[in-house]
Image 1 (cartoon, rainbow, N blue to C red):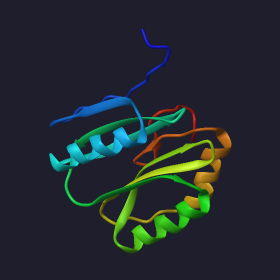
Image 2 (tube, one colour):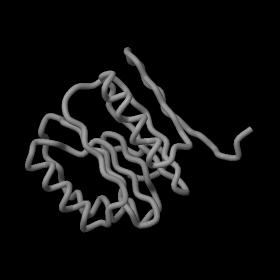
Image 3 (cartoon, rainbow, N blue to C red):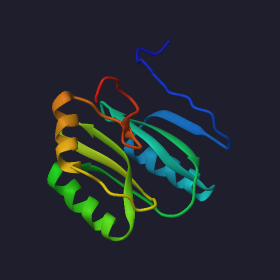
Image 4 (cartoon, rainbow, N blue to C red):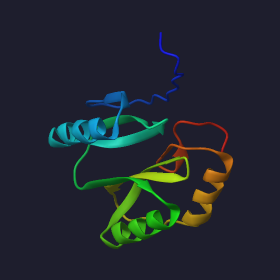
Length: 140
């Protein structure tokens, strides 16, 4: 049995769903390309001790993600993608680095994004999915 603890949230839905954990960054890149080519997009991303876990579901359109960014690098990358019509879909913070997954989404306002990131970081939380904690509980 693995020494790692897993937690999940399941909701009604249809279509394919794949997840994989324990991946190196290079393994994640290969797995993401494989699933992207099959019409799946990243919907959740976590990193602990340099190992990635991810969930993929059916999707369309662009998807860009970039690991290992500082807060300032992330702010600049987020603005560049937002200006291209892409909205943040997944966010993971580990060891002061931000690992963001970005996907094409319908534009909607993002309020106080910078202060939200700081609050999340200050509380030691990581994974976010659709603006709500996916891997941790208790942030409001």
